[in-house]
Amino acid sequence: MWQSRFGIKLVVWVLLNIAAISSYASSNAVELPRQERPDWQQYFLAQQVSGTIVVADLRQPQLLVYNAERAVKRFSPASTYKIPHTLMALDAGIVRSPDHVFPWDGTEHSFKLHNQDQTLSSAMRYSAVWVYRELADAIGAARADQYLAKLAYGNASVATAEGDYWIDGELAISAVEQIKFLQDLYAERLPFSAAHQQLVKTLLLNEQGEDWLLYAKTGWQGKYGWWVGWVELPAGPVFFALNIDTPNRLDDLPKREQIGRAVLQAIHALPKETNKP
Image (cartoon, rainbow, N blue to C red):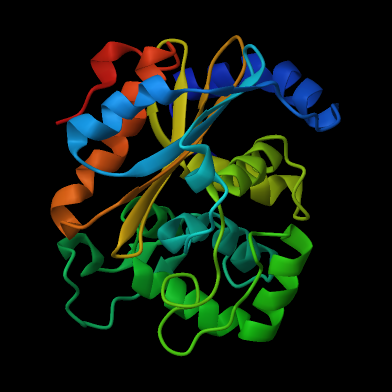
Protein backbone atom coordinates (compact mmCIF):
# COMPACT_ATOMS: atom_id res chain seq x y z
CA MET A 1 0.00 0.00 0.00
CA TRP A 2 1.18 3.52 -0.74
CA GLN A 3 0.74 4.55 2.91
CA SER A 4 3.64 2.28 3.93
CA ARG A 5 6.05 4.61 2.14
CA PHE A 6 5.80 7.12 4.96
CA GLY A 7 7.65 6.69 8.25
CA ILE A 8 6.27 5.89 11.67
CA LYS A 9 7.07 9.42 12.83
CA LEU A 10 4.80 10.89 10.16
CA VAL A 11 1.95 8.47 10.99
CA VAL A 12 2.14 9.36 14.69
CA TRP A 13 2.35 13.07 13.88
CA VAL A 14 -0.70 12.91 11.64
CA LEU A 15 -2.69 10.99 14.25
CA LEU A 16 -1.82 13.59 16.87
CA ASN A 17 -3.14 16.34 14.58
CA ILE A 18 -6.43 14.73 13.48
CA ALA A 19 -8.38 16.63 16.12
CA ALA A 20 -6.81 19.95 15.14
CA ILE A 21 -7.45 19.36 11.43
CA SER A 22 -11.06 18.29 12.09
CA SER A 23 -11.66 21.40 14.18
CA TYR A 24 -10.20 23.62 11.47
CA ALA A 25 -12.24 21.89 8.76
CA SER A 26 -15.52 22.40 10.63
CA SER A 27 -14.95 26.08 11.32
CA ASN A 28 -16.33 28.77 9.06
CA ALA A 29 -13.91 30.72 6.92
CA VAL A 30 -13.17 34.06 8.57
CA GLU A 31 -11.29 37.16 7.55
CA LEU A 32 -7.97 37.12 9.35
CA PRO A 33 -6.59 40.28 10.94
CA ARG A 34 -4.18 41.68 8.38
CA GLN A 35 -0.72 43.06 8.95
CA GLU A 36 1.60 44.55 6.35
CA ARG A 37 5.22 43.42 6.66
CA PRO A 38 7.39 45.96 4.82
CA ASP A 39 10.37 44.66 6.84
CA TRP A 40 10.27 41.48 4.76
CA GLN A 41 11.60 43.51 1.85
CA GLN A 42 15.06 42.75 3.24
CA TYR A 43 14.78 39.11 2.15
CA PHE A 44 13.90 40.06 -1.42
CA LEU A 45 16.61 42.72 -1.57
CA ALA A 46 19.18 40.21 -0.33
CA GLN A 47 18.37 38.02 -3.35
CA GLN A 48 18.02 41.01 -5.72
CA VAL A 49 14.53 40.09 -6.92
CA SER A 50 11.06 41.62 -6.80
CA GLY A 51 8.11 39.69 -5.48
CA THR A 52 5.47 39.16 -2.82
CA ILE A 53 4.73 36.74 -0.01
CA VAL A 54 1.47 36.13 1.84
CA VAL A 55 1.46 34.17 5.09
CA ALA A 56 -1.70 33.00 6.85
CA ASP A 57 -0.52 32.18 10.36
CA LEU A 58 -3.26 30.21 12.08
CA ARG A 59 -1.30 30.15 15.33
CA GLN A 60 -2.30 33.77 15.95
CA PRO A 61 -4.41 33.96 13.70
CA GLN A 62 -3.30 36.65 11.27
CA LEU A 63 -2.61 37.37 7.61
CA LEU A 64 0.87 38.75 6.97
CA VAL A 65 1.57 40.40 3.62
CA TYR A 66 4.62 41.83 1.93
CA ASN A 67 3.91 43.85 -1.26
CA ALA A 68 0.12 43.92 -0.97
CA GLU A 69 -0.39 45.27 -4.50
CA ARG A 70 1.38 42.30 -6.05
CA ALA A 71 -0.25 39.86 -3.61
CA VAL A 72 -3.63 40.31 -5.34
CA LYS A 73 -2.21 40.33 -8.87
CA ARG A 74 -2.82 37.13 -10.81
CA PHE A 75 0.01 35.16 -12.41
CA SER A 76 0.17 31.86 -14.25
CA PRO A 77 0.20 29.11 -11.59
CA ALA A 78 2.79 27.11 -13.56
CA SER A 79 3.66 23.92 -11.69
CA THR A 80 1.78 24.89 -8.53
CA TYR A 81 -1.19 23.88 -10.70
CA LYS A 82 -0.05 20.29 -10.26
CA ILE A 83 -1.90 20.37 -6.94
CA PRO A 84 -5.43 20.85 -8.35
CA HIS A 85 -4.45 19.02 -11.54
CA THR A 86 -3.67 15.88 -9.53
CA LEU A 87 -7.00 16.12 -7.74
CA MET A 88 -8.75 16.31 -11.11
CA ALA A 89 -6.89 13.26 -12.44
CA LEU A 90 -7.74 11.24 -9.33
CA ASP A 91 -11.39 12.30 -9.40
CA ALA A 92 -11.66 11.41 -13.10
CA GLY A 93 -10.18 7.94 -12.42
CA ILE A 94 -7.24 8.54 -14.74
CA VAL A 95 -4.84 7.69 -11.90
CA ARG A 96 -5.64 5.83 -8.70
CA SER A 97 -2.49 5.82 -6.60
CA PRO A 98 0.88 7.54 -6.17
CA ASP A 99 2.50 4.46 -7.72
CA HIS A 100 0.75 4.82 -11.07
CA VAL A 101 3.50 4.56 -13.71
CA PHE A 102 3.85 6.90 -16.68
CA PRO A 103 6.31 5.39 -19.21
CA TRP A 104 8.89 7.82 -20.57
CA ASP A 105 8.79 8.00 -24.39
CA GLY A 106 12.49 8.79 -24.75
CA THR A 107 12.05 12.50 -25.45
CA GLU A 108 14.96 14.38 -23.90
CA HIS A 109 13.97 17.17 -21.51
CA SER A 110 16.19 19.90 -20.07
CA PHE A 111 15.73 18.58 -16.51
CA LYS A 112 17.49 15.20 -16.32
CA LEU A 113 15.16 13.78 -13.68
CA HIS A 114 12.32 14.11 -16.19
CA ASN A 115 14.05 11.70 -18.57
CA GLN A 116 12.78 8.47 -17.02
CA ASP A 117 9.58 6.66 -16.20
CA GLN A 118 7.58 8.59 -13.62
CA THR A 119 5.07 7.73 -10.95
CA LEU A 120 2.49 10.20 -9.73
CA SER A 121 4.71 10.74 -6.68
CA SER A 122 7.87 11.44 -8.68
CA ALA A 123 6.01 13.59 -11.21
CA MET A 124 4.94 15.86 -8.35
CA ARG A 125 8.35 15.76 -6.64
CA TYR A 126 10.36 16.44 -9.83
CA SER A 127 7.65 18.62 -11.39
CA ALA A 128 7.58 16.54 -14.58
CA VAL A 129 5.57 18.67 -16.98
CA TRP A 130 5.25 15.93 -19.62
CA VAL A 131 3.28 13.75 -17.21
CA TYR A 132 0.78 16.51 -16.59
CA ARG A 133 0.45 17.15 -20.31
CA GLU A 134 -0.69 13.53 -20.60
CA LEU A 135 -3.13 14.06 -17.74
CA ALA A 136 -4.42 17.26 -19.36
CA ASP A 137 -5.08 15.39 -22.60
CA ALA A 138 -6.89 12.63 -20.73
CA ILE A 139 -8.99 15.05 -18.68
CA GLY A 140 -9.81 17.25 -21.67
CA ALA A 141 -10.37 20.99 -21.81
CA ALA A 142 -14.14 20.82 -21.23
CA ARG A 143 -13.84 18.74 -18.07
CA ALA A 144 -10.93 20.85 -16.81
CA ASP A 145 -13.05 23.95 -17.32
CA GLN A 146 -15.80 22.41 -15.17
CA TYR A 147 -13.35 21.48 -12.43
CA LEU A 148 -11.82 24.96 -12.36
CA ALA A 149 -15.24 26.57 -12.15
CA LYS A 150 -16.17 24.34 -9.19
CA LEU A 151 -12.90 25.22 -7.49
CA ALA A 152 -13.17 28.95 -8.29
CA TYR A 153 -9.45 28.65 -8.97
CA GLY A 154 -8.10 32.08 -9.95
CA ASN A 155 -9.74 33.21 -13.18
CA ALA A 156 -10.64 29.55 -13.96
CA SER A 157 -9.63 29.88 -17.64
CA VAL A 158 -8.28 27.03 -19.78
CA ALA A 159 -7.90 29.28 -22.83
CA THR A 160 -4.53 29.28 -24.54
CA ALA A 161 -3.27 30.33 -27.96
CA GLU A 162 -0.45 27.81 -27.70
CA GLY A 163 1.31 25.74 -25.08
CA ASP A 164 0.00 24.51 -21.75
CA TYR A 165 -2.91 26.55 -20.43
CA TRP A 166 -1.51 26.51 -16.86
CA ILE A 167 1.89 27.84 -18.02
CA ASP A 168 1.47 29.71 -21.32
CA GLY A 169 -2.29 30.28 -21.36
CA GLU A 170 -4.74 32.58 -19.64
CA LEU A 171 -5.08 30.66 -16.36
CA ALA A 172 -3.92 32.91 -13.54
CA ILE A 173 -4.13 33.05 -9.75
CA SER A 174 -2.93 35.49 -7.10
CA ALA A 175 -0.87 34.76 -4.00
CA VAL A 176 -3.90 35.57 -1.83
CA GLU A 177 -6.02 33.12 -3.85
CA GLN A 178 -3.31 30.47 -3.54
CA ILE A 179 -3.56 30.80 0.26
CA LYS A 180 -7.34 30.27 0.16
CA PHE A 181 -6.95 27.20 -2.05
CA LEU A 182 -4.29 25.70 0.23
CA GLN A 183 -6.41 26.33 3.33
CA ASP A 184 -9.33 24.51 1.71
CA LEU A 185 -7.09 21.61 0.73
CA TYR A 186 -5.67 21.40 4.24
CA ALA A 187 -9.17 21.34 5.73
CA GLU A 188 -10.42 18.98 2.97
CA ARG A 189 -13.10 21.46 1.94
CA LEU A 190 -12.42 21.19 -1.80
CA PRO A 191 -15.07 19.56 -4.05
CA PHE A 192 -13.18 16.26 -4.15
CA SER A 193 -13.24 13.18 -1.95
CA ALA A 194 -11.47 13.41 1.40
CA ALA A 195 -9.32 10.42 0.41
CA HIS A 196 -8.05 12.16 -2.72
CA GLN A 197 -7.31 15.37 -0.83
CA GLN A 198 -5.42 13.39 1.83
CA LEU A 199 -3.40 11.62 -0.87
CA VAL A 200 -2.43 14.88 -2.56
CA LYS A 201 -1.35 16.32 0.77
CA THR A 202 1.04 13.40 1.28
CA LEU A 203 2.50 14.05 -2.18
CA LEU A 204 3.32 17.60 -1.10
CA LEU A 205 5.31 16.60 1.99
CA ASN A 206 8.84 17.97 1.54
CA GLU A 207 10.46 17.77 4.96
CA GLN A 208 9.72 16.88 8.54
CA GLY A 209 11.25 17.58 11.92
CA GLU A 210 10.52 16.60 15.48
CA ASP A 211 7.40 18.75 15.69
CA TRP A 212 6.85 20.17 12.21
CA LEU A 213 5.98 19.09 8.69
CA LEU A 214 6.63 21.15 5.55
CA TYR A 215 4.27 20.72 2.60
CA ALA A 216 5.24 22.72 -0.49
CA LYS A 217 5.27 23.02 -4.27
CA THR A 218 7.34 25.16 -6.59
CA GLY A 219 6.29 26.61 -9.91
CA TRP A 220 8.06 28.42 -12.73
CA GLN A 221 6.54 30.12 -15.75
CA GLY A 222 9.83 31.46 -17.09
CA LYS A 223 9.41 35.11 -16.13
CA TYR A 224 8.37 34.42 -12.56
CA GLY A 225 8.30 31.59 -10.05
CA TRP A 226 6.25 30.34 -7.09
CA TRP A 227 6.76 28.58 -3.78
CA VAL A 228 3.51 27.73 -1.99
CA GLY A 229 2.46 25.41 0.81
CA TRP A 230 2.17 25.25 4.58
CA VAL A 231 4.02 24.24 7.71
CA GLU A 232 2.13 21.95 10.09
CA LEU A 233 2.89 22.85 13.70
CA PRO A 234 1.39 21.82 17.07
CA ALA A 235 0.00 25.35 17.54
CA GLY A 236 -1.60 25.40 14.08
CA PRO A 237 -0.74 25.52 10.38
CA VAL A 238 1.14 28.38 8.72
CA PHE A 239 0.25 28.80 5.03
CA PHE A 240 2.47 30.66 2.58
CA ALA A 241 2.40 31.76 -1.06
CA LEU A 242 5.39 33.50 -2.59
CA ASN A 243 6.09 34.61 -6.13
CA ILE A 244 9.12 36.41 -7.53
CA ASP A 245 10.33 37.70 -10.88
CA THR A 246 13.03 35.50 -12.41
CA PRO A 247 14.92 37.70 -14.91
CA ASN A 248 17.97 35.45 -14.58
CA ARG A 249 15.81 32.38 -15.21
CA LEU A 250 17.42 29.21 -13.81
CA ASP A 251 19.85 31.19 -11.67
CA ASP A 252 16.91 32.77 -9.84
CA LEU A 253 15.00 29.56 -9.07
CA PRO A 254 16.71 28.76 -5.73
CA LYS A 255 15.73 32.22 -4.51
CA ARG A 256 12.09 31.15 -4.19
CA GLU A 257 12.75 28.81 -1.30
CA GLN A 258 15.58 30.90 0.13
CA ILE A 259 13.30 33.90 0.58
CA GLY A 260 10.34 31.82 1.71
CA ARG A 261 12.39 29.94 4.30
CA ALA A 262 13.91 33.16 5.61
CA VAL A 263 10.42 34.57 6.20
CA LEU A 264 9.13 31.38 7.83
CA GLN A 265 12.19 31.19 10.06
CA ALA A 266 11.76 34.85 11.05
CA ILE A 267 8.27 34.08 12.41
CA HIS A 268 9.46 30.80 13.98
CA ALA A 269 7.43 28.63 11.63
CA LEU A 270 10.58 26.75 10.56
CA PRO A 271 13.77 26.10 12.52
CA LYS A 272 16.97 27.75 11.34
CA GLU A 273 18.64 24.44 10.55
CA THR A 274 16.35 23.87 7.56
CA ASN A 275 18.36 26.36 5.51
CA LYS A 276 19.28 24.93 2.11
CA PRO A 277 22.17 25.99 -0.17
